[in-house]
Image 1 (cartoon, one colour):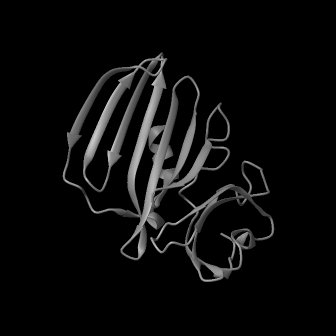
Image 2 (spheres, one colour):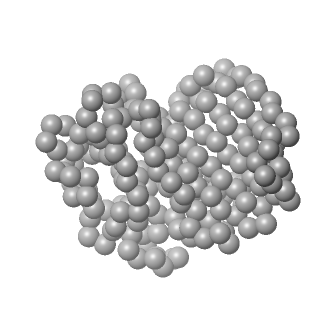
Amino acid sequence: MPVLEKQVATPEDIVPNGWEILAQDSGDLNNDDADDAVLILTHSNYEPDGPDTRRLLILLLRDGDHYQVSTVSGRAVLSRFSGGVYGDPYESLKIERGTFYVSHYGGSAMRWGMKHRYRYQDGGWFLIGHTEYTFYRGELKEKDENLVTGDIVERIGDEEGNTISSKKTKVDPAPLIPLEKVDLYHIEEETE
């Protein structure tokens, strides 16, 4: 992982040599009425076996006239070589309602997708929800989990996106997972 400045004047100033911005969004993430920033950086070396194929997720909190690095993760965004025949699995990055999420999509005969939502609370960043789905032979299976409330919605749909069946359950919420412990590469290995 490259050495990053701890404080920058603009979000773009955080990008080290040899890296580029894949995606970025801005909005208030810590409820202080200032626009913060989330960036995903990718290394300009695109070799599948290169030293820097992973992507960096960087969270910057606005502090007056500059941005402070809040956290950096090298395992919360999949590399461009992790999507199967669909290629680069990165789909989107979005800040909304004081949270942000990162979506991925990939696969081959069986397509898969996942969206992980994070929030700043108690002085840190935590995974607060995730949605995972598979699409195979005209059938969509989707599971959406709210890790704060314990609410789970499972849905089966058809090719056109129509819901065939839906089930809601509730479990006791487990302790939230800090962003720095999220490892999508481990999840990917389990689902292959």
